[in-house]
Length: 312
Image (tube, rainbow, N blue to C red):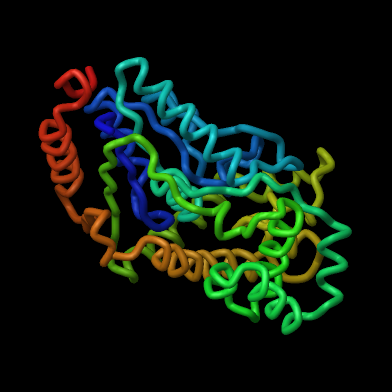
């Protein structure tokens, strides 16, 4: 377990992209995205996808994996992430996992067991007819451990747990057991004061609009990608669809993007808690990029990686 993996995480607009480029250049690294919104081709501006210029500064992986009408499951992402990490390590370079999608970061770092059970529409419909209280009681009978983890009011999660259990014949809690991956992991968390973060979010939204976010969505619409697609539920796209469909003005849509992105940033903070001992947090004030770089260099030296050397 001495192969190194750097994880750079934090809320949206905190500064992950800029720092990841610096780390990759200084440490002979390659960037592996852990942001579910970057999977989709043609959705560049609204996802704050690294630009062509930024991607040319360091190798990037797990970006532009599929068109907007396809999906990448969490299990598929986890497999691809491990394959990519191993590929980067095999080439003597340093993998740097970067993202703000907590579920995807933790699935890789903690080695989540992810049941490979595709959605069963007919079964889901039948379960939904039973109602929340009955579903919760049934899950307690079949899988008491899973029942304790799920809020009985969250019917969608209860249905998924029952779906997996009924299809596989095994409790979902058994299938979801974690197996830590074979890496020595250094997790770096980036943070900023809330008001400063909100100001950065608002400025980025304004820049996205100036860069042509509305035109990007109109192009996707003209290509046949509809509003109901899961990819279109992302911040920016969802609100501008409401504008295009006459549900609000453009100014209202932009303000809604900013407001809901603030809320999303607060939600991200629940995934990446500052009291997590596995994460070393850095407040992104002036000069902190150098502090992060020095911390990682020291960590790499302490690890006596593989053959006793840090990546070339």
